[in-house]
Image (cartoon, rainbow, N blue to C red; front, side, top):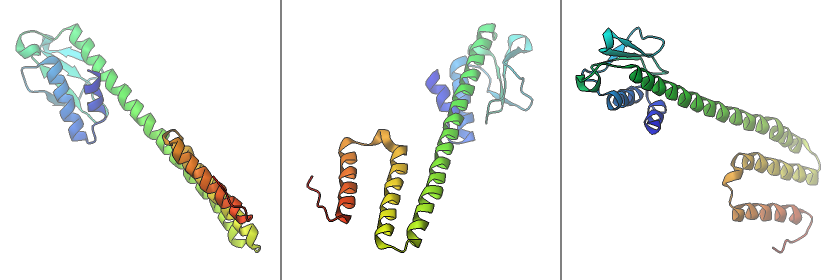
Length: 186
């Protein structure tokens, strides 16, 4: 049921998350009655109404639920059902927490790139702007472009093909050598 729990936890909208959760519960427990949304859900999965109902706690973005009449009304809910539902709830929590950790990591990386661009590139461009000497200005701009390429490529290093990396190195070397009157023969 891991793929189904992942589909629930990573649903793009709350409505879709609720629909997928209900579908997973229906598939897993086959309650005879419609699954009900609970205003006051318990903290943990529990049996209610002498085994007729199973109550589930609220999840992130999903209200608590009450299911009645397990297996199409052919049996009462049991401790095995409590364990299965508790596992689904825990799995949902792990997937949601992992997704939130991923999003935090993406945000941290974006912040790092933004700071690098703002601090390093901004300072280098200001230095180049105020440099009186043309060759110094050109050197500062080349260094700034190199740093900018490095910042960008750090984020995508695993996606670079050798041919792309080689082409970047060639272009950068040609630019640097041209300033000194040297022609690159690759």
